[in-house]
Length: 119
Image 1 (cartoon, rainbow, N blue to C red):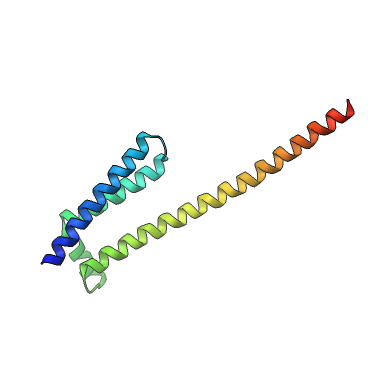
Image 2 (image 1 turned 180 degrees about the vertical axis):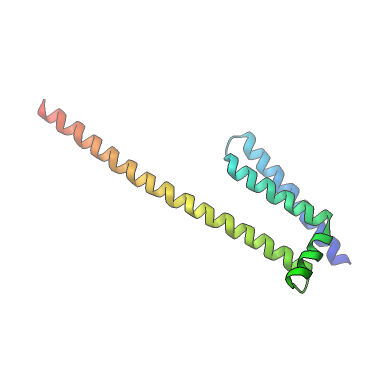
């Protein structure tokens, strides 16, 4: 009983801290809207699991988990891995754009230098 209450308190506190931190970063315009939506939904999911533990019990029984907390951990790990994968894709795309822009700047500088020499 104590363990369940401790886990619920940790979920609530962790979710509120996450939401407060994300909202603070949004106010300072340091987080994009897509990221804000993800983290606020993540916090909301933690709050729902904390306030309604029956959902975790039901899902853990349905999926064959030994304990509801194992289900909660798997869900959290899955969501964070999914977010990590999406961020990895975004970094790869930005890296590609950066390389293309760097090449374009270098070509423009070379073109300007050759035009100066022609004059």
